[in-house]
Length: 101
Image: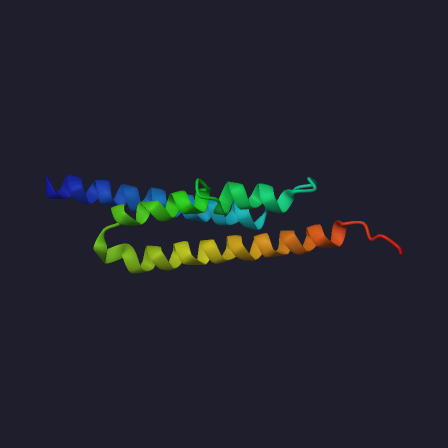
């Protein structure tokens, strides 16, 4: 029974780790030609139903021994997403046509 529980925990942690890695790559590689790429990104990754928040909600399922490590990884993921959003916002501002007076 204990071995089975250990196997389930290990599988959960492996799955969570894979999700974090994949999401890191997806965020880093995100690009869009849409005028509102920053808003599309914000909703998909950082919104209340976004992918980062969804992963953050899994923290309560992480065993206590692993929470510090997983929490650090999730915080780094969130910071990456916030940095990418800032970059997209700056890019959107630079794309706006300037009006001459």
